Length: 460
Image 1 (cartoon, rainbow, N blue to C red):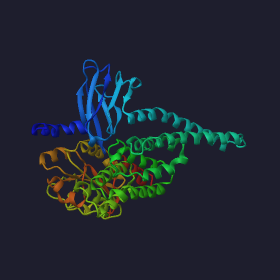
Image 2 (image 1 turned 180 degrees about the vertical axis):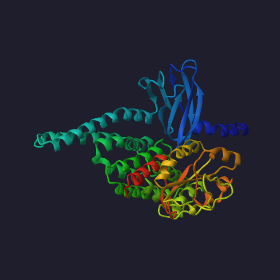
Image 3 (image 1 turned 90 degrees about the vertical axis):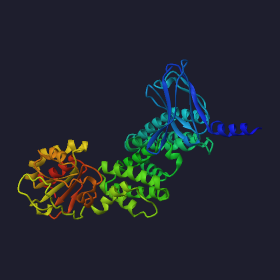
Image 4 (image 1 turned 120 degrees about the horizontal axis):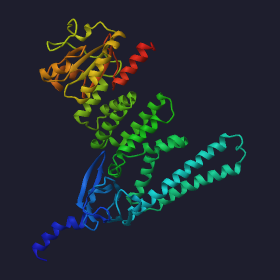
């Protein structure tokens, strides 16, 4: 072999040795574009793209770094999920928007995936129906004595579960699909279990807690986000009292961190996503626990934006005293000027951080202005701290607001923003007359509910 041939082989080897294909024929999609995308945690990325020829044939490639789950997407925007495990895959059908025409004719793991995807929902439906009957026979006096029927129901339930387990057990231990199918089942069955099979909730929660978020198989599966979301949805909807829900969430957070602390990248990804999820659902006790746990974990480094976001919980949590705010010459007073926030003679003050360049602020802060007069009668004052760095923008934004508006024109670098650990706009803090933090409203609706419950209706 001459030197040139040897170099040529080395150049071509990555393509020949490590590239697999997803190919086939989609007869109704001739001359359309087609692509293969994969998953990296919460994100998707393009693996390969091509054009379907005039006869409906297409060819896409993927490599070892893409192993996991991917999806084929054509111009009709209907995805076909495929297992990218290192095998060549061949698909035939009419169009991805007509899944009943699609068949996997090459790729054993994908054939197993296709078979399970067809059979498992039927078993789940049957299992749910048998569970309903079992509860009826246990609760209804007329059926309680029908022991043979109850035994038959339990036998059929066990049969269905065994059939599912046997299918998984028959798959090669080192195959991706053997790991993926039960994980997919766990994630997708949450709402059914919560609604129709609540007895399975404890074992389902235990299975979620056993998931390893540092596992590359999960990271590449397309289930990464849903595993987090559905885990905590099930905890929230488990039928427990709220204090027990929070304790369960803390236990789950602890379980997730056991391995995440050894993987900084995934710790940041999971913590960031879960914190936002808990905040969005107003599960503040759980989000505070997550924030403090992440900040106290010394073996990993949080990225600066996430650390600042979480630090706000340690420094500005409920019960803490908020820093005083000194009003500068840039402050607009609708009435008599004052020197600082503590000079306000009001039982409550809502401090709002926003800016004219923030789309959500453009929508929500004028809405706050509409409630100002009615809230003021209930004892709530309002102060806007603007992050605008331009005087004209600040003046135009605040000119019609009936409450105090102030700025230092330093945007995120201002002292007030730093003192209050503000990392996004709009951000709100509800303070009492001593500046003790009573609430961190995450929406106008939450603030309205607080005023209505505690002030208008007088609940204490």
